Amino acid sequence: MALIRRSLGLCPQHDVLFDNLTVREHLLFYAQLKGFSKDKIPDEVDRIIRILNLEDKRQARSKTLSGGMKRKLSIGIALIGDSKVVMLDEPTSGMDPSARRATWDLLQGEKRGRTILLTTHFMDEADLLGDRIAIMAGGELQCCGSPLFLKNKYGAGYHMVIVKDALCNVSEITRLVHMYVPNATMESSAGAELSYILPKESTSRFELLFAELEMNREELGIASYWSFSNHYGRGFPQSWKVGGF
Image (tube, rainbow, N blue to C red; front, top):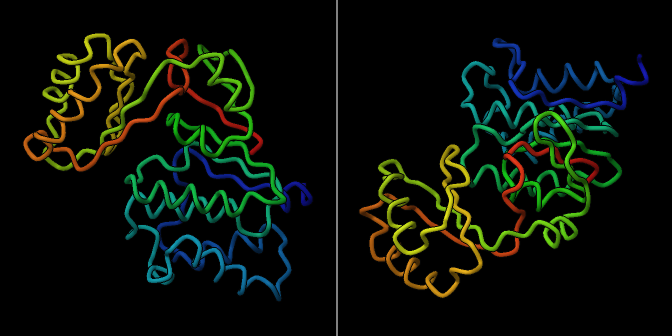
């Protein structure tokens, strides 16, 4: 069991933190629990705090942190101590888009020498981070392969992602999307992001749609938006398990 503790890092779906411990104290505690070399712990704690971008919160108690900062701390707990097997259950849930992308960069930088199993509802997250992606539906494994293999097999045209501002009018945006691309489907509306699947056969109407969105960005409550092609199809619900990247 001691050997397992030393090699395993876990970030559960819901943060399991001690309200009255600071960010630094959490990392110190878990580094010691994993049996990390005592003389290396202070430097390792400082390194994790730095890559999490929580340097100004190192002495803050966890109960004072925002939801996104708590997720960062949970990820740091999973990574600290040079864990070789890291399990991350929806690690970016509750983060705003910029924090989510910063976390992607962090995980990309920390993956060398580790096996990371990650679950996510975000397909762009799966695509970016996963060397191999397994799709789950109804509690059963539907398929597994590299991102390129799955795109080629289940590609469904184009995705459009919209970053919402505080006054975003989702129903009006959806009406506008359907006006130009009747077969478009809303993929998700999670947190600050809204995404749609745009069928390939409607490509000729995309320019008109994008022009309309750009013209009415402020009225619709759109902070930014972008589209990308050849992503995964609609044959599976958005319950993704990403492993081994």
